[in-house]
Amino acid sequence: MSELKETLKAQIIEQLNLEDLTVADIADDAPLFGEGLGLDSIDALEFIVLLEQNYGIKIADPSEGKEIFQSVDSLAAYIEKNQ
Amino acid sequence: MKILVSCKISDQGVYLNGEIQQKYAKETDNWKKDIYSKLELDYPKFYKMDALAKMAFIGFELMESVCSFEHFEDNDVSLLFANRNSSYDTDLRFIESYTEKGSPGPSLFVYTLPNILTGELAIRKKWFGENIFFIQENFDAEFFIDQINFYFRKGSKACLCGWVDSANDKEECFLFVVENTEGEITPEELTKYYKQ
Image (cartoon, rainbow over all chains, first blue to last red; front, top):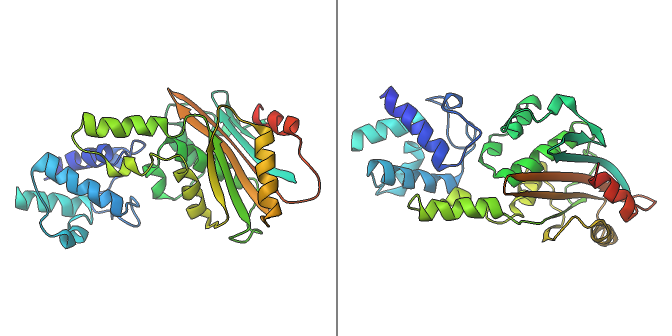
């Protein structure tokens, strides 16, 4: 699981073009939206693309996104459960 | 009109009101993040910005570190910006996202207009005055002064102006704030600030 989280952080940095950030700057449980990384609805689209391209996971119900994209912890848990 | 404060960031370094700032020397390629850290800012949205918006953000924060704008109301300040290469660097990265990486990146797409940087500054300061972004061959002091006078005639009390450009690994950022007061600025004076 921890390896998946590190990979996810690197993918988030690349997909969202957060080039000034490093993996170490993102805490597992830090909120990705609002506070924390300060992401917004545009970035939610990037997460949907990231999950589909890298893990073959399609989010059928967009309303689930809020919970799934809460943190790296929640993203990793969702991937583990749905892969 | 009077120039309240100016900031120039170029390959030579960071200048505030014409004086080089050793504290903010560009020591690494990551200089924008370095200055952001030195200013002890807490604005996570910074990390999402493209190079143009980051430069304008840093330049503005540097000016605000030595000059208060608190006396201006939300609608008092107009924003007037220009550059030569529009959003060229980000345009290339956006093209790369769908030609080489498989899908167009929404977070890149939003920065494929240079005037996004004026929006970023307006959001940061909650300034709701007029804002505009011109594409020009070179910094044109006479043009800026004409436009500033136009805004002042319309009632602006101040104008945040900037020439912010980034293309082919060459970055340039010149910001200044002009207050609507007695007196004039000549194109020669303004050009001197730009060339500092």
